[in-house]
Every structure is written in structure tokens, then in C-alpha cells.
Image (cartoon, rainbow over all chains, first blue to last red; front, side, top):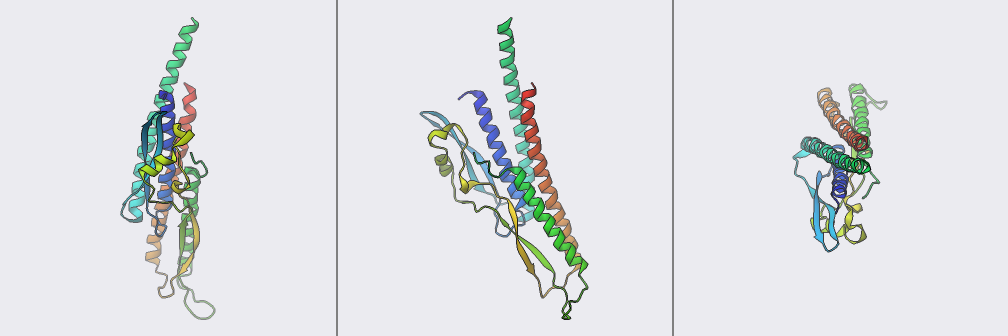
Length: 104
Length: 139
């Protein structure tokens, strides 16, 4: 898989995780709701890498703990997403540099 | 990837839920010493919420990988059983044996405000992610 496509997949996963964690925060006071989180899952196949999201329940310790867990996860996820976008931008900048050098 | 419900929608549903809870608490405080027309004291209420999806929490790593099989192997794939959950108003519960205690109502109000703040933070984080994605094209 192309490195840029790999970064795109990671960005899609980060967006999905943001939605899951937003759900944890929104449902912190919902009776019976168990906070959840996702982890990226990758497997090598004959056709290349394939990706999925592995869902798991989180023992956050009640409504307050669920909010704290979600806020921590959202902050970490946002930083990771920013790093991914920076990496994508750097790679695209390299492509542009190569294209410009070719034109000279 | 399931895009049917986004972090924006979920955070917004949470904010709406907390606002509803605040309205109920405000009504409890306003009616703390009120007697109804039949002479009985006002019964404080609590808003109850429910998740808008019923996730299959038993979905395992292997299940998740199975979902990603087939032609969509290059994409992160999810099915409905792993959809993120929003929240919605389910109804009001009356507490007939408890008078509307202003102290407990104020504590609930502060707690609800904190939950609302958390939803706002989730919304801002989602917005920032979109802004950063747009900025990729800026070089």
C-alpha cells in the first residue's frame, strides 16, 4: 500500500475514533451505557494490508470517569490526527518538489 | 466507512440532552416550594436519556477484521454493530417521595454543565480535525 494511502486510512480511523469518544461523552449519564473505545486492527493478506476497527468496552468508573476518559482520548486522538496531516502535507510537498525539478 | 453519524452529530445530541436536563433542573428549582392545585407538593423530575444505537459490545477484533474483508480491504470498514452512539431524550421520571432539594438540584446543575462542556470540547476537536484536513492542500 502506498504510504499516502496508509496515512489516509489512519486519518479515517482517527475520525471514526473521534466519533466513538464523542459518543462516550454524550452518553456519560445514559443509564446502562458502557463507554467504548476503538483500536486500529491491521492484517496482512495476499492482497495487501486490510484494516478494521476493533471495538472494546472501557471500565472508566462511572459517568464522571467516562467524561474524563473521553476527554483524554479526544485530546490524544486530535494530536495524532494533526501529526498525520503534517505527514501528509510533507509528502505532498515532496511530490511537488520532484515535479518542479522535473520541469526545469 | 460508516459516515451516517459523525462526531458533530453525536456531540450535538449530547449538548441537546444536557440542555434538556438543565431545563428540568430549572423547573425543579423554580417549583421547589410550589403546591399543586390538589394540595400535593411539586414532584421533582429527572430527565432520562437513551443511546441512539445499540452497539454489539461483543464485537471482537476478529469480527472487526471480518467486516473489513472482501473488496473493501483497503479501507477501514465498520458495520452497524460498531456505530458510534448519540443520545436522545427518553422521558421524565418523577420522584414523588423526595421534595425538590435546592442543594441537590444545584449539584446536578453543575454536573450537567460539566457534561455540556465535554460535548462542546468534542465538537471543537472534530471541527479542528476537519480544518487540519482542509489545510493539507495549503502546502
